[in-house]
Image (cartoon, one colour):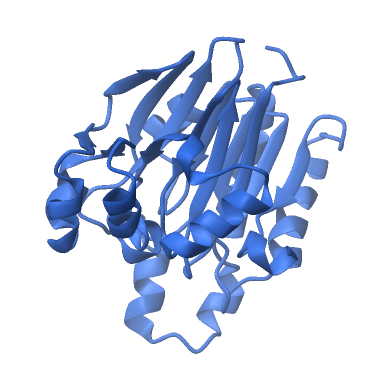
Length: 266
């Protein structure tokens, strides 16, 4: 696999306040999720030198508001952009979404694939407490692959199979377990987050990263960090230490943490 890839991946927004990632391969540009306002999505795209009119498709992971908040207005204003979404999430989404997505929604479920301009997109199931939840593996015709997996309670065989061999990944590193257990959240919410259909901890993320690097990953972006139960430094340190303990060096893996909002850097 070629480490010098022509794939551009930019997490525009990440976390419980909203999620949206930008992927470009050649002349083709995608979004994964649209969990902030349409206005902010447009501003973020302008900041990285592109425009909503250049987006070829939107891939939705699941129906929680921090992943689809801007989808209704995006679909209304851009009826030509297909929105790929799994059936369970589509059925569970806000009913106002339907009238604006009648012509743009494309139902694709786990194990389905999508072919778009030199990119094969493979859809895999992820364990999360939503009606339906998926991740995506983008395989490009230059031999590289990019994997996206957030909102995952645990690492499953499906996730391993999808992310092994990906040169780049965006992977959830949601919480520090001690911060969560000792934090202000009510017990029911803590139990939900820690469950196998909740969110991935820093420790679980770090452990899985050692597997991914062993299987060809050279760039990892830690994403969907909790504002209350994590910090960028804590998430980064946990994974960096685990990778070092496993014998990997910065030459083996470029590790970064996704910003909550790219607009905060503007």
